[in-house]
Image (cartoon, rainbow, N blue to C red; front, top):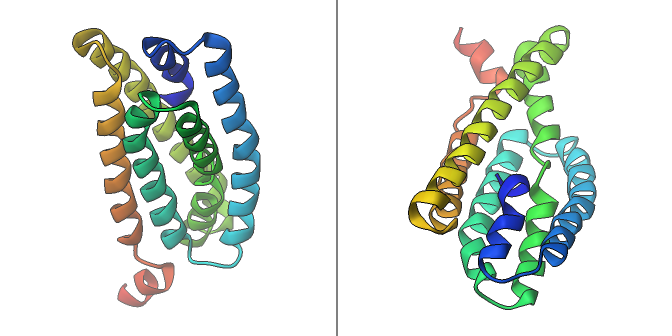
Length: 170
């Protein structure tokens, strides 16, 4: 949704396209840092809790975005750095969870299905944000709804039972 609509959302606030594209590029740079750091953290910490923090922080950043768009350029830079650090950070702990829960032999296939589900959700979010923008004249509602969905995902992440508990139960 952000990759699809950030530049248009910036345009709604009079932010030039080149500057908006620069914000997206800044996110990409910080995405490299965040995803690499997430891989390191995934080797050392419980992936469920990493996902809790990643989805929670992503949700908070999306809730902040409408204020950043209406604020100073500095607030948009802060959003871009913060969101960029978290953009693909969920991948390493998700891969680790897939491997732990389903075994190394099936983890590739399982993660492939996770990616399919993600892409379906992402396409729905991108389409829905466009529909909301056309209906309400602003992306703010879509960003806030997406932020709350991320907060729900954060809570769901810590509800995943560790593989050891699942094996002991049954």
